[in-house]
Length: 418
Image 1 (tube, rainbow, N blue to C red):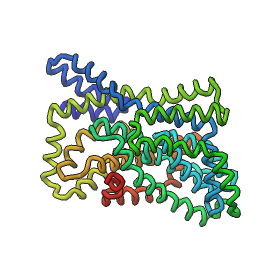
Image 2 (image 1 turned 90 degrees about the vertical axis):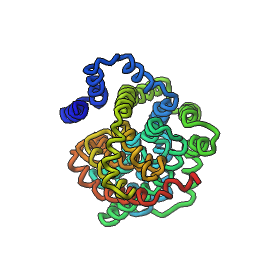
Image 3 (image 1 turned 30 degrees about the vertical axis):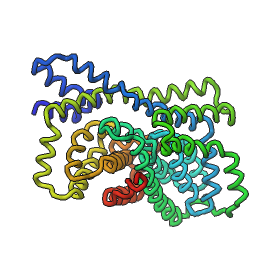
Image 4 (image 1 turned 30 degrees about the horizontal axis):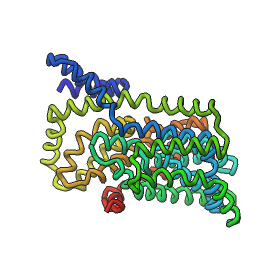
């Protein structure tokens, strides 16, 4: 009881998430007179995991892409492909987010890199600034759905499941969600008259593909190695960094030592906090397991729930609610040890559940008051959170349709693994 009260109180008063995770079990240990050596060892072992090296490497690769002009190549290719359609630039934003997501693994990072380039372009093309911001914020969600995905890496470590399998399982749900986002982007743009009508030019498309061939090949080269079983996710992450540096320095010649240092600083800022949170999250999870908390919660719920779809619906609603005020990785770190034993009782595949967990947590990036993607888009445009949130509602509704589809159709996640 004291443990739960301390945890809830820490969340309510807004303490940093690593404090919320670390203080309750630490207080319990002190009151019980237990030695604290295990606390220190768990903090160390929680972050001393080889698999977690993939996260800073993927974030660094995404930073290099954004600063070196690789993202601009992807934009030109997508503009040549769909730019002629109503809402062409809005659709380009979603499609570029899909490609950028295949390297960065970060939602806010995707919004910053793609939105920083395309929001001004959309505004110049006659789009309302709040709509342009909403499109970019929504497209950024794909950063944690389409592999590599930082939340999937964290879930894979906590749940002891194959991260490579999680990446493969995330391909179709991520692409499906991207396709769902194209629908409101096209419909609203056509209704509002956004975008200029242009004639499609095969020559322009071929020129854009040829000019951006190295940028276009980057996701396929890196992720293809994982799916083919040639490299591990960590090795692929290192490959992504090396490939991005080679293209940026020797092909595009747009990045010098000062630029590389800026990319390193940006990546370390993003990942530094994760190290502290991950250590305390592992300690939090181990404390719950030793005290049989997941089993107690599972028994209580299993006593009233008799369908796996009802259980998944309850979990989905819970995660969507928590996502409004909890950060994505923190939600996964806290809830995965509690929820996983429960869903296994109903025969839910841990890989499928990992995709659901990533999708529901990702939607939290679009829901105030936390909504980190919305905040990034607001910073890029100078708009208020209310303005951007209002225009993002149609995109959020279509993402919910995608989430429900993935929950009800496990084959969408597991098809490529069979």
